[in-house]
Each structure stands twice: as C-alpha cells, then as structure tokens.
Length: 290
Image (cartoon, rainbow, N blue to C red; front, side):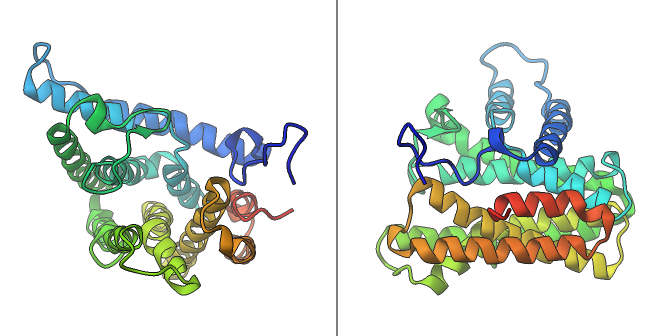
C-alpha cells in the first residue's frame, strides 16, 4: 500500500529494518570496511602509477556504499555455531570482495552496461573499461587470498566459494540473465527462480557456509546454514524485484515465493537454537514476515 506521498514502501529498506537487523548490519559494515581497507592498501607509488591506479579502482569498487549483507551473514553464521566474529572476518572479506568483483564485471558494456552503481559512477565510467576488468580480476583473486588466512579450514572454504561462484552456479546465473535480456530465453516462473537461486542465492549460501566453516561447525549445521543462505538469497531477490517493479505480470508469485522462502529460512535458523535468533530475524525481515 502506498504512503501519503504515493510512493510504495521498499520491500528491503535498511533504514526501516528491525533493531536487531540494523545492529547486525551496522556492526558488520564497520568491521568489514576496516578489513577491506587493510587488505586493499594502496601501494607507495606516485600519482598516476599504473599499480596505484589499479588498487585505487579496486578500493573505489569495494569501499563504496552498500548494505554489506553478505559479509554480515558470514559473521552471523559463525556466531550461530559458537564462533567469534573475528574468526570469520577473513571469510567475510572474501565474500564481499568476490561479490564486488561480480558487480564490477556485470556493469561492463558487454554485460549489463550500467553507468551508475550504488548512487555513483560504475568503475568503468569512473576509470575505463580495461581498468574495470583488471579491478574485477584483482578483487576476485584477493577473495581467495583472504581465505588462505583460515588456516587448516582454507581448503574447504576455497572449495565452497569456488563452487558457488563458478560456472555451475553464480556465473551460470549471469549467463541466464544475459540470455533473458537478449530475448533468447523466456522468463517463466521456473526459469526465474533458477535465475535467482544461481545469481543471488549461491553467494548467500556460500556466505553462510563459510561462516559455519570459520566457526568450526559440524556437517549438520553447515548444511542448515548453506540451505538457509540459499532460501534467504532467493527471497532477497524476489524482494528486490518488488522494489524494482520487475516482472509485474508475476507480482502475486513474487510476493508468495518471497514469503515462503522467508519462512523456510526462519525455520532453518531456528533449528540452530537460540544462537540462530539473529539470522531468524534477518530472514523474517527479508521475507516480509510479521
């Protein structure tokens, strides 16, 4: 229902998030931005030096405005299995670095051809296309370098992130998206849900499972958190569709699936016991649940 101004309230509005969710996102944003600032330090080079320029472009992409929802999930998932936020900081940084790389490359003229991202020029507009490609490549490799800090768990974590972000999942989602935009693939309900599961849900799932790995979780909790992340990610994308007015002919489906997946994610979070309460509240918010 529209407000007095005639503007429909956003389905996902961080400024209107419940207190527990706002606190979770706020704490994660501060921690992850400090970590990214450290990991993406500008080399001591003269102004205009190519190496310095590349790192400046990487920092421009990674340290710009954003919800930091994915790294927040990593930190919260680690806490939910008895770990500390500090233990998951490297994994959270990896998730955000990888997410940022996908945005930089998605915005390129050969992909979505966007000029604005998060209220400011995209990297290829602020710099140039070649620098944007290299910045995305640098962010991707930095993501896997961050996982090396997990020590004995680094191999497991790298395998999860590679699988979820590779050609069988996240990149497949982008390929489907490009086919849809080009008119080569019709968007029925099943295709749309697959698109959301691959392009958005896969990295949400990785974020949660990486948090579980960092927290030393067993197989059961890792599976629950991976499933939670997938359900939450798809619900988040349906909510984003509502905000953007996408697929208006499927609006009833959008609302129904957002709610169903939100409830599924809440149930999975609650299966972790009281430690999963923050994740449950986040899922209720994303799912539009009371």
